[in-house]
Amino acid sequence: MTTVDLPLLPLGRGIDRGSERGVECPGDLPAASDPSLVARALAAKQALGERVFVLGHHYQRDEVIQFADVTGDSFKLARDAAARPDAEFIVFCGVHFMAESADILTGPEQQVILPDLAAGCSMADMARLPQVEAAWRALGEAGVQDLVVPVTYMNSSADIKAFCGRNGGVVCTSSNAEVALEWAFAQHGPDTKVIFFPDQHLGRNTAVLQMGYSLDDCVLWNPHLPGGGLTADQLRAAKVILWKGHCSVHGRFTPEVVDELRATIPGVQVLVHPECRHDVVLKADLVGSTEFIIKTIEAAPAGSSWAIGTELNLVQRLAKAHPDKQITFLDKDVCYCSTMNRIDLPHLVWALESLVDGAVVNRIEVDPETERDALVALTRMLDLPGKSHKD
Ligand code: SF4
Image: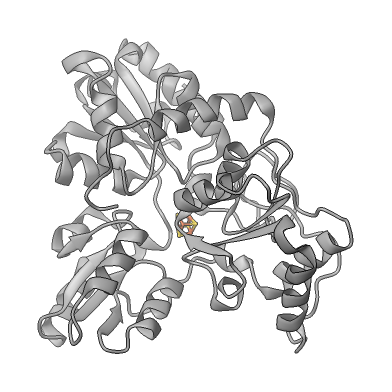
């Protein structure tokens, strides 16, 4: 077994098209201090009219979100894009894997644009295709590959989704991970195993807290260790093989801060995303996707107190929209998603004005073979029965 070298590539420098990490932003960006940026964005959107559809992920900055035609999580936005076949240009204010999914789910004539190519996702970057293929070979050497169903979180690159499509697997979101895992475990009878990419926490929280597997049923595959750091016997005994990846934002929340907030805010309810660590989720009152978090706060009674463990832009927006509720961020430090925040108003203005001038910049285009196989795994997800109660 060999490990794959991953030389560090600072964001925005050099080219690494095989990864979520970006490339340099070409062209002249307007200065962030330009006081006419809002007016320029409005004018460019107006000039493009129905030809452009702007998607804004919940974790985007306010300065960008104000220009979104729809907001949502990554899966909702990809579906929203697919529902607008007349839009020539889809400007995706989010990160690279989301723009890839939108490209896969939209028509071939539609062009998906990511205003800053350096807007990648550190979690998606933690599972690279050569690493995943090495793990798959190890499962073969352990004699269990035929029993393993690969499941990948939406937050993964298109080639990992395609790998799952080629190998009988499925994509899931934080809303439907339980349903997707139930489907996966039904594929090869009682001996079925699942390998879950790239977020160990979503995989563990779903398998243990929602499906009743024990922590001992789960093993952790470390792509940087020979054989994933596991023996063939451990692979044979496991039910769930978790990929050692995590979200650099949600991975920051700790059980100690939950305890501190409970001690200082009487009656506070702790609401976290399932990408949080297992020991944090265990201490929370409610766990669910960003859409679930938003709906929960919208439905909460006036005067209620909440500590929310998800990206700070969203928590701040919720606090602003619900001044009748006490909303606290579940971390002492500022905790934005740095790659999401690469999409700022200058990049959005530059992308829109380029379109007005007839130039498509920063197009995200998944190659046809990858698109075909990724679509198999995405379609399996779309065909799953029902949805989780935490949608
Ligand atoms: S919040 Fe986490 S999972 Fe989402 S884009 Fe940022 S690093 Fe990736």
